[in-house]
Image 1 (cartoon, helix red, strand yellow):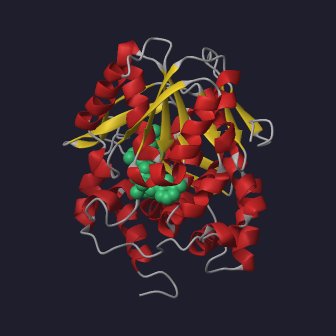
Image 2 (cartoon, rainbow, N blue to C red):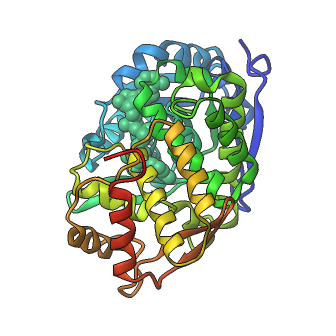
Length: 383
Ligand code: NAD
């Protein structure tokens, strides 16, 4: 299939210096080679495809075939899957492959996988020969709506997540929703948390779509690919990618506006850290973080109980956890102080004020946080 046959929708990421498109289309993997050529990459260009064994098994062959058909000279590098692999040592393996395959300034790295592969391959591209092009081909819902767009790349340091990194915008992002067929359901649900985030922080129409699905099936309408359905899924992908593209274009290096994307992440980060990485998936923790931020907002009189209920209903329909885990409250507060979003000792919270609007506040009292978490520990119908 050619790129044209895959009928991509195009979302522009309108950066001044290096704008690029996000292409969305079911079956689009087969059109990757042509899409790359359309970005001005010449046939004969050397390409290193970086992926992991699971994704390679499903999609490696068709991606390589599409790139080779377009006249690109490709090799594929398989890295072990998992967050614990997101280290400088693994990036060195990508650099070694770049050396072996003689990647030059004009060469290309293709990241085929979830956020782990995308962050590492993007960082390797940012650093090889002081920066070569990268194309992001995200294969998880989270990477499609978040990680692949915006140019944040990097790896973990023993001292914390994503401490080593660079901004390096991709040349192209190609999203093929069909690959979500093979994504484990739990990963799908975790990605849905980020979709919900975009609705709450700035897109009431997207939220309305989520709410309609939640009303059809309150306990699972957003929990897997089949219950969401192809048409709605493409719309959710398009709206979410557009939301991310808009924020990134307005604030490429996280100077201000981009901070709203951290909605749910401040308290979510505490859940991830204190439960031990791996107990909660990132998206599951973000879902809890959004509920907690909503409770804080309620306590501060910034938003309405009805809106918190609406937010809760879509999070429930995505099959995400609703009850705050049994964590030591003082440890949560201490963890917030270690967050990257702390400025001069004050924690910056993104708080919802309406469906589609948030405020950034640094005046949340610790007692308000503790009470909010207490209320979430045993929400209605649970515990
Ligand atoms: P992931 O990359 O670990 O993928 C999750 C699992 O799904 C893996 O086991 C993977 O092998 C498997 N998988 C991926 N696609 C599949 C498919 N189509 N079919 C079957 N299995 C598939 O996890 P993730 O949630 O995509 O990414 C999380 C990472 O993204 C974190 O490291 C996080 O820091 C990073 N991230 C980065 C940004 C950014 O702006 N750069 C934003 C958000 C998250």
